[in-house]
Image (cartoon, rainbow over all chains, first blue to last red):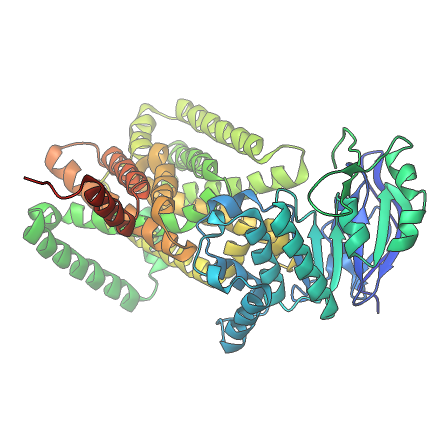
Length: 258
Length: 332
């Protein structure tokens, strides 16, 4: 059974398709990078895969069930782009935030198992020393690690991250991707939506590139050799080299946003 | 249906009604004794005991629900539903005067406020209207309906509605305290049962959705709970000021809270402080009760905001000691 299975998925607003006829499957244990220009439908594709939106045509399955009916919150952990407004304003502690990951498991009382799972998630991600700090007081990198811990507390076997390192400093960013590598080595399936093509080509096993339609789906080495970048980003595309890590490159951005 | 009839319905079981009466009596005696020991005989008057009981109940439920509203940036919902409650009161009074049917304004307010709460959610979900646009439509629509109904009724209608607009401590009776007690029990019980999901949805809506939490259902629940709180608080605070108790104590608590749980507890403490102090001040100074309570709540917010900007005690001590070292011991 595939973790994610999209078959001929199309979705749009009015007459304008955002995602058109995309088919792909993600198997257990894979580390998949999803890239595409701004406005290419990356986040929409993730929403379809997670059942947050229903395709206009085609089918989207999550762990073998229609994604929109998949109610098992214990299997998927979601980390959004640089935390929500509430995360920077609500007086929620790191402990409270990580405990939220257990909520799908808890029926009445927060039991010993739940406390043990939270403690294990703290240790795995290395945020135990932040437990009593408010999430709003943390740096961008620390916050994203907390949200990973929340996903691990839920015992998720699929981690979906939507541009998680936007606004995170270079050092924390490297540590963050190292953590994702380690979790993937431990067997967790990772779907990483990234604007930083350098990250995708150095960290992931497989690259999916979309620009409304699927432009490329294959292993990372083949992606670097292919013409998918110029097809998706246009012939004028050139990677923007900069200093936050070897091999890093960003797409030439388009004006529209997703 | 009058308030008395409603109470009779609510307390079908005579023992429950007797227990309620006994509780009101005990609460009144305790409030009188505590008042005499501190601020004088303000709470030895029967109507002030009922106003205090109602105020204490509102002081619990308003910040309890308001915490979730404020952090979801839905503070305007309270105002919107208060205006809907106003239309409900006008409707109850109009039907009562035009058709000589006894309709409790509290019950008609409750029905209209709950319908408005669900209406806002439906507008947001089914149309392109953004949340604040939907609220603006319902707020102005409800107020317009209320004023039209008032103009259709007799002159006495506008006199009756005045007490609901601005609140009245004198007119709080046992029946309305009984209704309020039921509303408080429903709100506290519902929040306790759904606390985890409400917190998750408030903190990270998308992650909650991915985790299988039915977010829309909880949004509707929160809107309905807000309608219940608005109606519960309407009699003493009035529809114009009721939203303040949903927002101001929460804003005060957020300044100084170290966790979400503590922010809930502190917001209730802030609300209770404002209610008790507001009742005492309004009794002795002869000021309007609801306005006094809300002004004091804003005072509590200002104090909390000031306290939050003071450096922690340890830091202050270190700064003092460092300043002392720099100045050095005075030499003769």
